[in-house]
Image 1 (cartoon, rainbow, N blue to C red):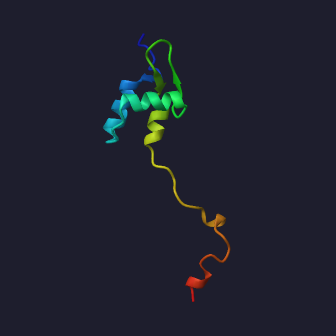
Image 2: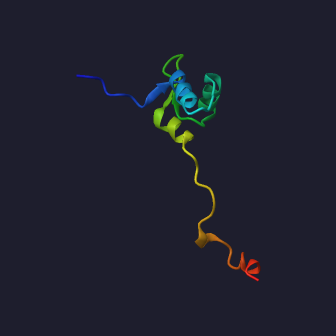
Image 3: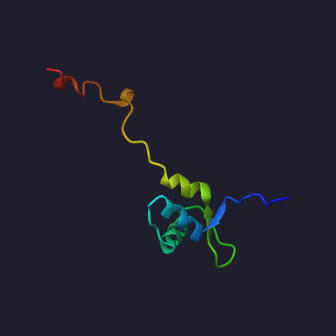
Amino acid sequence: MPRATSDWIDLGEAARIFAEANVPVSRSTLARWAHSGKLQAIQPGRQIYVRRAQVRAMLRPRKRGVPAHQLQPGLFEDLAE
């Protein structure tokens, strides 16, 4: 029976995922992010592992802007004149 793929990947694989998305990030930067808590990580020995899903989520564009219902009332009224 084949082994299930783990969500935990080493820093080399995480760097490759970033590189494939044309976002060069070094292993040392990933290690720094792991130690600072920016990336969830485990370190069972010398090797650091991070979550594949979290790495991929960092590559997704963030939604920007404010929904219309949260705009300040009357914000654009003087533009209509």
